[in-house]
Length: 167
Image 1 (tube, rainbow, N blue to C red):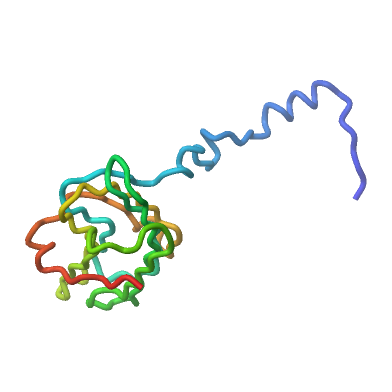
Image 2 (image 1 turned 90 degrees about the vertical axis):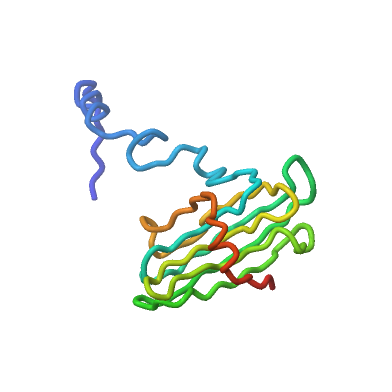
């Protein structure tokens, strides 16, 4: 391929005007602040940290950091959530403690599911102290579907939910 040198100032200026420039505000790039944090909250109620509302296939992983609000040791968890398409049972969940303080009796993760609809909720159960929880979706096969709501959990669902074992 032959090189062409542009010496004409008019041609160079025209190219500068028509070639798009990538910035953090346009052309599909996210602001740098999106890299730092997805969802973090200090809570005195049980919270939904992930929710599936149909029988959609799911293959998602979450990074979850917990600490007592205002101080205390952090605990870092890695959670995988997997289910095949058109399955109405609760997904398979593997929860690993990957660092920080030993997994205490509190806080506890639970799963509530409705096997008639395929919907499910992963809940951080509030117990005796106020946890500060940070949740980030690390990997997913359904990016438009995945969401970390951190909304208040219905207490009846919390009571009916089953505990997720930490490995």
